[in-house]
Image (cartoon, rainbow, N blue to C red; front, side, top):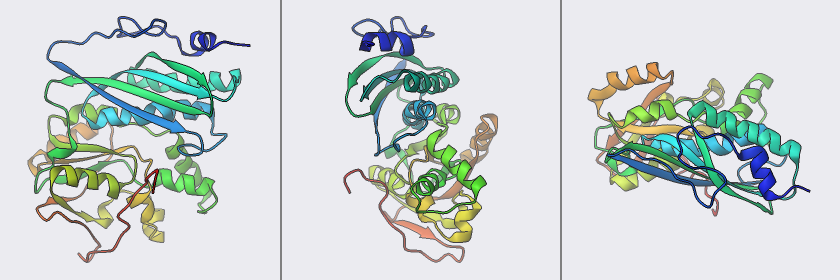
Length: 314
């Protein structure tokens, strides 16, 4: 029988790259440069709430860290450190080996040190805290959107929620599209590279985790502004346009793309950053003085839409 300490030593203890003291003591010690600020975010993933039972453990290891890095990217910061707390119903070495492999694959790709955490027995639950750094007073906030700002999004929206619907049997997709959507659901790529450059140009930013509409509304409320979106400019798979199943792009969630606003004069600079970081980006609308959110079709007609995204307690 393995102890929790043996599990930590075997699967989660790794040489540090940018940390004074990491896993193995009562607390970690991290070095921080002068005129830099620490940005911290925590997220929890619960089986059958955030991921389906029997999800591939390597993919789950990747996703559990990736979704947290997305929050740091949305602040315009560079992620550096993470803690991992995990509740396990039983010790399964095969599962732990694959989970840690996926976790560290993501950590290595984005330069993250795992510096601590906790293990306990209970329902499968993964809780991660990520920390990053940024120049003092340069963090991107939800409250910074300005009237006439462009509204940008990275990547494609709706893929992950279509993947979930296909796994749950409520949406039938072509085999190749299904594979693509499940990959988007289970191994999202946090937009860390472009995120760390956006603080120079963007006025506000948020990561899309609960759906485009709901997350944009967080920005609008914090900034006391409104927005007008162009439905056909929202980047999504041709299947959504052809089937008119726009709810996946508007309300689906689990995209972990960035939504940010910036002045029109910064368009060229932002496009250069996107090209440099190999990130797909699109302008989907504009920030307005009117505090409502409108979505317009091709003919400029306002359409009705579901104003709510994912909510744990809805």
